[in-house]
Length: 320
Length: 320
Image 1 (spheres, rainbow over the protein chains, first blue to last red):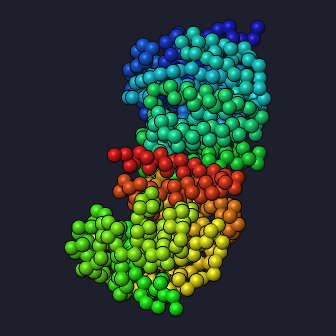
Image 2 (image 1 turned 135 degrees about the vertical axis):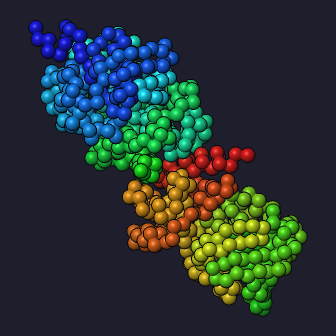
Image 3 (image 1 turned 90 degrees about the horizontal axis):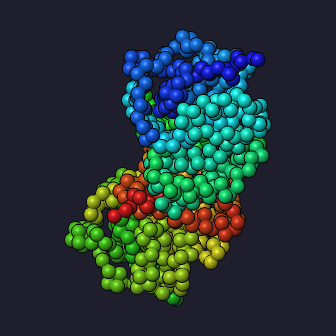
């Protein structure tokens, strides 16, 4: 029986981008006994010597020793390569991905936004691509030091050309098992594109307005005007999804609104990036959805308005 | 011959709101020899004693003595009552206007936005209303101290029910002459509603974005994204004007863009209000146009997006 992917033996994982997200999930996988290899940049020296420290609401833990690399060509080829970079770094992937992924391997992209897998399929056309949407609240607070505040669930869906919905395969099920054994809740989605649009229902209004208006989620929900604008933006996302034949019912939107109302005051990940003067994921979250629906002849004017506002703010905020 | 309006004798003027705008135009009129009566609030004591000082790029001047009031009931009835309050103070007009305007008088409203004259016609149904749109760059820098930086032209148009275009009347011509004799350039518009929409072509994008993005006009024009958004917003204003049968051609929009490109870096009046924590004229400039076109079944989504953003910012900015 062919076992090149590791269906019977343990799978080897690579983490490209060992930050708040990649560091957290990678550490959880290694803690559960898996063979994990971490690519780092600024924290390489520290993590090579001292490993990773995860401060978590589910219990703190330290990994005194991890497989740390600052050069992808030094890494072993892996069964599962987790892309945990910000999408603003995706221009690096043509150099990073090919050396580290096995021919029979999987690229698991833990990134927000749209058109992500299509771009990666151009780089590694022979391997399977899985998309993952993380509901995670986590920050990197120091070198090799990750603070996990809340949540952690990942929605996984298999990428196919044109995003045709796809039954759950053995490969994705095995990866899901690895994550679940490591204490990471997993939901499997047969329709990855629908899952991505559903995530945008939350990300577009809250990430965008939190930066533009310097506001937390609770402030946006407490004010009648922004509460209304959030809902209008969610409806535009639903209109966008419809151009790909994905239906997001009003009930889903109401659930998202109620869910956010009940959340603790939350500073979105885009707002954290903005406050830290890091580049914002404007293209993945706003630009790509706009391009996709414009190709179908549809305009999303309020999202477009915020796209231009965010690009202006991002440009000014990241000037050297 | 009936001369109750003062077609043959000198007209008596009232200025309601002696700030950057009312103080400037009122002082110019008095300096030209007209009989002007100023209503003041916070500056009343100072101006009663020391008069007005206008620091102007056209030459500084002082009026050591002016007719100052802090109670509209002490004022004489006037031929021309100039409303120079911010629109955010218009809820005061039912108390302020009736005592001071002659039966045969004129109310001259020097305010931006839409639906202004319609509201005033509800208060003083018997008198003529004239709308005026000021292209003025002026600040109040101290009690009774006005700094006139640039421009000053006023476009005047007669208000008629339903904003039917109207030939220039003797009354409006006389007022125009008074202003011109005082060195204030006047343009007469037969179609006041068109003039108001044309003013919004500039005010909506630049006033709105300057507050939301904390930017000056030159910054908005230098960035490709905001430059594009400004133009999209101008096109939405034109679509709004069209619901009232007013045509704003693309050539007009291009002229506004080029004019702003050539302007010196400019902090808009709404941005100045925001920086001073004064209430913003969101309803007059954004809310009323939106209501007017929604009544015609038309949606202006990008202007609506900015309306909600501005209301949120305004609310938070003016908290006691």
